[in-house]
Length: 88
Image (tube, helix red, strand yellow):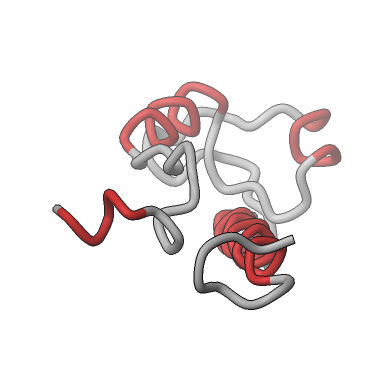
């Protein structure tokens, strides 16, 4: 069900696009390649359990947490279909 001047299925297309964007972002943040035994930033040893749980890990828990706090959070709603996004 679409509303206004949009075609049928337009709302679902917006939802699918938002989910696809979030999946792409999450995949881009995943480590890949050969993991390290010591953190890239602080040279602290990375525990074996962390290296087994996250293949390709390059940062210790402390440095990873700090990096994630610096990254911008995802928007809470779909800006593509929002009328507010056209006004700002």
